[in-house]
Image (cartoon, rainbow, N blue to C red; front, side, top):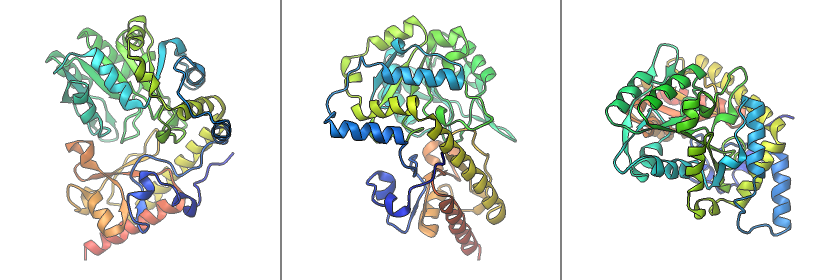
Length: 386
C-alpha cells in the first residue's frame, strides 16, 4: 500500500478550515490536517453507517474502539491499557480540561513547556488553573524537557504538568529515561500529569515512543493520558478522543465524569477510530513513510534553496518547526510568508514567546507542494534582500 495526497482538484472541494481559510493562490500548509484520503477500512465503515442511517447517539459503553486502540498500543509500544479504564469524549482538548478540573483546585499552577501547542495556554485557565511556563531546553542538537525547571515550578506550588508527548510543534519524542525522571519529580511533589499523546501513532521509523503511563508505578498513580486517532487517521472533524488511566484512583476519576462528557462523542468518530486502530495499520505505516519522504525532501530543498533556514527533523508526526530568523522577516515570519510568498504557515508566536522568528509547516501533502513552498519562500527571501 502506498499513501499519496489526493489531487488538488479533490482537495479544493473540501470545506475544512485548511481549504477555505485562504484564496486558491495560497498554499495551505498551516493547520494540522492531512491531504491524504481516508484509510479504506474507515471509508467502508462510514459508508455503511450512512447507508444504514447509523447517525444517532454514541453508546459510551461500546468498548470496541478502546479495545482497538489498546491492541495497537500493545503492538506498537508494548503498552496494554485496559479498555475498562478508558472513556470517550469529543477531542483531546476535552480530555485535558475535564481531567485538570478534577486534579487541581481553582488557581493552581499547571506547567506547560513552550514552544508548545497553542491551545494549552487557554485550556489551563479553562480548567481553572494558572499557566506556569517551563520552556524546553534548546540545546545544540535537540530540544528536551527541563525536568529541573519543572521540579522548581512544582516546589513553588504548581500542582500539575500538561505534557505534550510527542511534542507539538517540534515532533520531539521524549525518551523513557526523561519521562521516568519526570514521573519521580511529580510524585515527590504530590502533583499530577495529563499527557497529550495525540501524535504518538505517527512516530517515525527508528524512534521509540514511550507512553507516559508506562514509565513507572508513580506515573500510573498520578497520570491520565489523552489518546486519539484524529491526527493519525485524519479524523479531527469526527470528534472522538479517549481518556486513559492505568491505576484505580485515576480510573475512578474518569468514571466520575458526568455522562454528557462521553455522550458528546461523535458516533462517526468512534466508528472511524475503531477501524483506524483495528484495521488500518498498513495504511498508517504507508502514511508515515510518505511523511518521512517529505521530511527528507524538505531537508534537501532547504539545504539547496534556503540554507539560512534552520530546523531539526521531527521524530513524529508531519509538522516542521522552521527557524526563519536569519531571513529578517520579523517576529512573525508567517505573516511575511503569507503576504509575499502566498504560503500559509502557523506563526511561531502562537506557541509561546520562544516562537518569535519561527513558523510551523505542515508536510502531510504532495511532494510537489513542499517543493513549491520552498521555491516561493526562496523567491520571497531573494526579493527581500535586493
